[in-house]
Length: 404
Image (tube, rainbow, N blue to C red):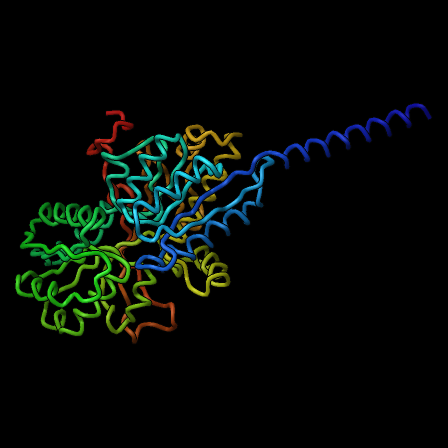
């Protein structure tokens, strides 16, 4: 009888301790993630609200807590302005307890975020910005570039088009860090493959009328007009090139950064035949289709590579916190670098010393209207670009984190 009472007492004590431990865990400060994106402007379709939704999906799928701490998501519209980006990010890091910022911004904002995260010793993950300098001259031990960059875009699309006979180029370039980086990286690839660059014109962000720029490209006589821009700028340039009969007259458009949402926005009549490099397509296999179906239920649209990448990166980050047993930025990033990425996004991903996540990319092509069987059946994958060919070799890196 005494033994029974002792066992009952011990069970009660253990139960009390368990409740106390759970309560203490719940009392801990939450892990806060900040998603900063373009909510309504030129880049809102491929990142934007869908990117925030993808991060929230990852948090929910993870279970909403990590190491006994609740996971909370903050989000903000950077309004395509560098000063807004920095104001929001500083507040998040300094006042709101944000441990990691994940972005879909322009490259100038991303480079500034990289420097701020290093100053604050906090994690930043780049999902929507493209400048390859983020893992080269502007690399940081606190930054990870996850989805794509200008080096991969140039070596995918630029090399394929040049090798296929497009050996003279004229660039229509967005006049800011991303456009300059993409033009520079693609020009290098064109020249390495025996081609020539005949000229370029710089175009302000969010330009509705590309007629004068397209006429300059047409009069250059270049076989290829390289569009070193993105979002609605790319959509407007492609539509107007079609309206002016430029491609019908024999010049080829090389769209160096195109998202699924851009093809949807342009329509296949204008977009058909466009080749471009991507890291993700929703209809590639059963895993991508399963994720896309769930995303569609939330957003009423199929995910772009940025949105899919934001989910994958968030999940990888949370798994690293769990494995490391801490939210310390350097320890978590070290865990992320040690752990391969194996999910619907990629089965061959790894994060290098320079912070670049490397994986197989794809050379995609927009279908013709006759080939499409539904509103989101927009692309076909023409080739796999192996990881060791898609990304800047570490032997060429100037990132001080890379041991030579």
